Image (cartoon, rainbow, N blue to C red; front, side, top):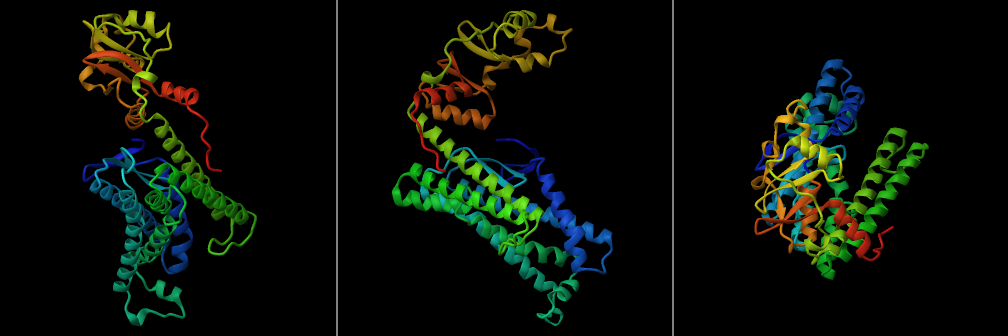
Length: 396
C-alpha cells in the first residue's frame, strides 16, 4: 500500500514515511537529549545534547531503511516486484506485490533483514573503536570512557547496540516478524504446505504478541522483568508492540486464507454484472441528477458504440466548480480507458483482490475484447467469501 509521504527512490523503489514516524522520532530524541546523552556527557551543553540526539534519531531511521532495503533487494533477486518501502511507528515494511513462490525465497528474504541490522551494529561498534584509543578505555568505568567520546562516536556507541538489539528482536520466531517468516519458510519446506506453515507460524506469532502484552502490563504495575526492566513508559511501549504483533499475525493469516479460498474462482463469479454505464456526451448535470443522486454507484463506465472508453466517478465531478458543471460533459472529465486498470472475467478473483489492494482502488472494470462485462468491487469479493466459503479456524 502506498500510504505515507514519498521522500525519494532507491533502485527504483519508492521510499515513504508515515506520519506515525514522528512519534518515534520525538520519543528517541527526548530519551537521548533529555536523559542518555546528558548522563554520558555531563559537560555538554543542552544544545549539543539535543542536536546530537536528533542526528542519532535520523541515523536510526536510516538503519531501519537499510534493513528493509535488504529485504527488498533480495526479494527482487527472487523475482518479487517491490513497489515501495514505508517507515512507520513500528519500524518499516517493504511492499511486495505478491508472496514468495518458494520457501527458499522466503527464508533468504526474511534472514537478510536481521543480518543487515546485526552488521550495521557491529560496524558501528568497530567505528567507535576508531575514535577511541586503548589508553582511553577504562573497563572498570565505562561511563568515563563514554564521556571521552565526541558527538559522532557517541552516536555510533548508541546506534551499534540498538541495531544489534533490533536484529536479535526481529529473529524472535513470531510471525510476521522476520524470525516468524524464517520459521514459516522452514515449516513450508518441511511440510510442503504454505497454508499449514502459515497457520502454525501465526499461532506462535500471536502467542509472542500476547506474552509481550503481559510483560508490558507487569512493567506498568512496577514488576521488574529480566532484560526488559520496569516502568510505565517501557511497559506501555512493549504492550503496544505486542498488540501490533498479535494483530499483524492475525491479519496476515486472514489474507492468506482469503487468497486460498479465491484461488481458481473466476472473476465472473464475484463481479457485479448489473451496473449503470453512461455515454461520453452526457451532460454532467444529467449525470449528477439521474445517477449520482439516485443510485449508490459511485463510478460509472463510459461506453461508446458498445466499447469501454473511460470511467467517470464522484471524485471527478467534485473537482469541477458547480458553476462549470452545466457546461461540461462526461468526456471532459472522465479517465480514459487507456489509463484504467482492468481484468478479464476468466482471471482469478484472488488476483483481482490483490490488484485492488495494491492499487488502492475500490473496484476494477471487467473487460473482454474491449467490452465491459461487469465491475468487481472489494465488497463483492468479501461478500462472496462470507457466503460461499466454509469456516476457517483462526489460530488463538
